[in-house]
Structures are given as structure tokens and as C-alpha cells.
Length: 187
Image 1: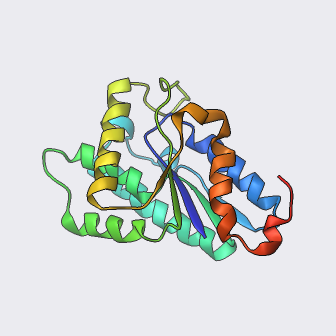
Image 2: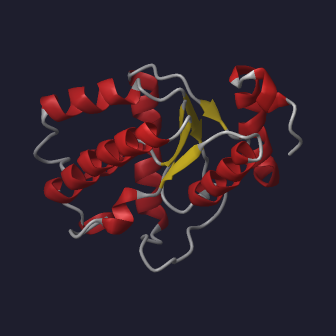
């Protein structure tokens, strides 16, 4: 099973990934976490990103997911290729996206069993890597929402009014597809 938390930067995806991974491990599952790839990118990210940087990120994301899937029953991803692709779309707005790359991202997006869209509920805070510009954050969010709609991708939106319950909500969405023995273990 492969799960990804999607959304723009600075919305709490990383915290949710660790929370969900811990809850699934308590249910005796082997879990691998795919960290946010952009943080390891040797090229510019955020508003200064380039096609090369975003291509590195997309291909690394896929490689990291493949590696994690070989090790665990459940893979929890801090982003998906889909939301990373939104940064590429923004970076190539004037030149356009290579249709082969777009086709690859679209096909890879179908490999996720669950996508949880994490909404914007406040201003991004500086974490040493990610951009804090609200307009940039909103641009990425809008690109993501457009792709989700136009590609008709199934996903669950976490309720902005229940931020403190997002981890529990994600876990409850997964419970019906877990093996029966995992349902027996308490949170």
C-alpha cells in the first residue's frame, strides 16, 4: 500500500507522515517513509526552481518510492509526484511542460493507493528550506487543485477545521483496507 500526503509547502505534510507511520507501525506493519525529496535537491528549489531541478526531484521521488516499496508493506510519502509536478509546471509556465514528462507523472500518480490533500490553514513558517511567500504557496495549491480536477484523480481532503485530528482521520480512512489483525491493535 502506498499513501501520500499532497499539498503545497508549509501545510503540515511532514508531521502527518511521521504520525501516520508511527500509528501503522503500532499495528505491526512494516512501514517506510519517503521524505520530501526537494530538501535533498542540489539545484535551486522554491520560486527559483528550474526544469532541471524539478526533473531531478520527480525522478528521485519515483526512485525513493520504488526503494521503499521493496522494503515495506506500507509506504508513506511526504508528497507525491503530482504535487512535485506542480512546481515544475510553474517553473515552465512560459515554455510549457514536456508531454512525455507529464504523461509519466500522470501514470505514476495512479500508483498511489491513497492521496490525502492537506489544505492551507495558515501562513507558511520558515523552516530553513521552504519559501514563506503566501502568493507562491497559493499558486502551487491552485495548480494542484487544477490537476486533481482535470486528471480526475481520487483523493481525500483533510478538513481544515479539524487540523488536530488529521492524523486520526487519515488512519481511519485506511482502516477498512488493513488486514484484520492490524485492526486489533490500539492506537
